Length: 133
Image 1 (tube, one colour):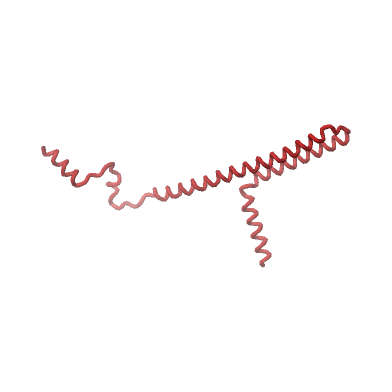
Image 2 (cartoon, rainbow, N blue to C red; image 1 turned 180 degrees about the vertical axis):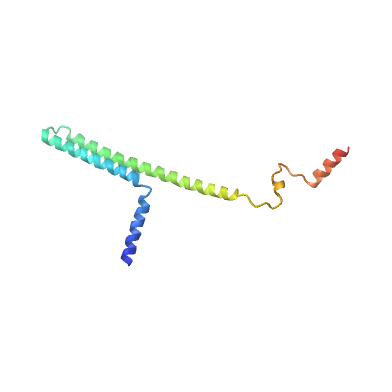
């Protein structure tokens, strides 16, 4: 029972971790496999042709490409996590705004809320005196 629970927990946590990253990891894996395949083909060609003059360059290009791919992937993940954190904050702000802008049932004072400026009793008295004169 505990073994099954542990397996379920590990698999579910792995899937939760992998969910936002699977496209990038798939692209990175495809690039790594392609680089290794092309390099292996070049090594086979160099061995069969006997021309080993560019062998050092092939290894340098291979490792530079792999290193650059991993660094680009890491930079992409850092920026996407930053954007994801900002979007989560924006969603929270929008939820709070939406919750605060939900119209409340009419309580009888809507006619006052819609006015630009309210008049006090003194303003009304002054206005009546101006009309009398």
